[in-house]
Amino acid sequence: MRVTSAKLRPLPAEVAVLLDQLTPCPRLVEHLRIVHDVAYRLCDWVAANHPGLAFDRDAVLFGAATHDIGKTLHPAELAGPGSCHEQAGYDLLTAQGVPPARARFARTHAAWDPNDPDELLVSLADKAWKGKRVAELEQALVTLLATASGRPEWETFQALDDFLTTIDTDTPLF
Image (cartoon, rainbow, N blue to C red; front, side, top):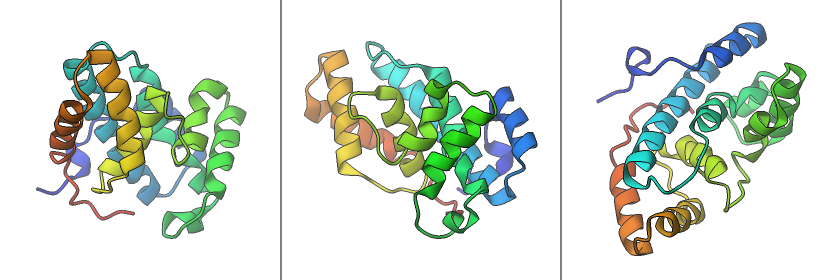
């Protein structure tokens, strides 16, 4: 099954307004929509299966929908490696009036705090949509989930692994 724009949840209204103002290229907008959609599903899964883990759903969804916004200023990083977009995205968002606590995901989606579930969820959504697995990232989230639920880490990992395999990865945008 291929993910199409019609199947994706709409971006948060405040993000849609930002994107109208910043006019990123369609490829970037589509990527942000996909990562937002995966973050939405991930948040639902965490809330249903690990209700003891405190996280800010709205912040995660905002972060997923804006994490790569700095690529509007560094378009070469749309198709190639680079990290200039991270600080640029943070600066761009804060210049638009976004509070630093929400703009931070532009900086932290590649270098997350292992104790911050919001950062881990945004980063995992950015990896999971394309089937990329990052052991250190997943382990950090598993540790928080297991601690919050009181379940063994191996059981928590298995459940997360099962969930991640359900994410549709047949959308080669990036």
